Length: 624
Image (tube, rainbow, N blue to C red):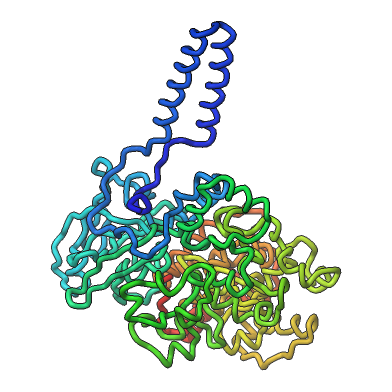
């Protein structure tokens, strides 16, 4: 079990082992041809000895540093054997799993697992300096004492501590050092943006109000339920410390297939193994997600990709969900799915954000990474039956597709939708050219109205564009996230003409000003982040044309929310890379007025001041 927590760095690849086998075969054949009798046998044994020795060398794990003090210990939940136990019989699945970002979601910190440069460069924050550096096979951080910082001590001295864990590897990677209390891990105040290859302060990597302190985060309470398999916080209330344990760091095989000990034991017998395969039936010793009922297959994803709080909170602080939920179970027995009503009624320390920061006013979740909350509120899930019920596996596959998104290649494009909504109806329905972005089902019915990690993310509550809903909730509609240069009144007119939607009364300013300009300057911080992301997308550029994005993004770069400013700057770089010949379509005076552009192509200062004065200034924190 200790190896489940250790870094998996086996040096042998399938290609290397195949090469060794080929060498053995060729060498053996040459020996038998060149020699006879006893000399041939001795030569063959010599070849086999060399190959065996080389194989053992390749299979031997590479030297690694000892686990840092404070790292989670082996779990106590029975039946878990870690993903490494799956490799022998399932090499293909194991290899495809290791390609995913689930596999690398949490790892012991080492120079190999840390994505950021470890050159000790000074990272300045509030007049203090943070450094990350390599020391042999270890990673160390110098930073203001995190426990004193959390306690509000402005004069907290610097400490140098070994980095224990990394969390994240796709968009952002965060780093944890030991806190003052036993088993307590605290965040380094900088995170590494993987695609941007840049450090940013942690408070700027999330959507947080200017000047607001980041809530204290502890790995054993905030991250363990989703970033490890069968995590156990083991919180000691008296000393406020942790004896944290986990069956495996990261999202391993047993998170989706359940504890594997019984499966491994049964299939040590090759006769039992091949008999099971030949039967074609379900194996009772392991969970196959594809054989589960729809609700329970989606629950595999929902155990992490949902906002929920534990039904047994005292038990959670000791055992996490390791004893109340295993793959194949229903979620309801172990946790309560959060809705706006449940959140407002409950409050408390598990979820301390207001409902408005997690949900749109109509109950649609607005935080990325919580797609299960959207899925279960979708008509395709609620009303679908049998094979027609929308589940996570309707689109996604753990072992297929690209690591980013993990879309099943057989369900790409519109294919996941057209299994139920097929035929010529789909082509006529969109009113967009076949093959265009606007004709894609997800463009209209899964727009990017959730926010996570400095990006807009597709909503997983399947619904339809609605001008009335935008007015009521503030949530941007799919039409205006592409057609950023058009007003909400324009959207309402086309929805009425194409689909018979009722046209709501449109306020004068919304009827005059393009949705992208209005929402980018007057929307709440979450809306502004979504618009800043959309302004840099090829889809919106194709729909809106150019000539206004740069001016708007220049204004949005000055947003008081650092995350909005960062996204706007990233989109501005994308916009300025567009070839000049594609920059600006000819626009009428009315179209320029909708974009708040003056004759010089710049934003009208008076219009900008009016929109900023009307801004929704409610504090919004989205810390996904």
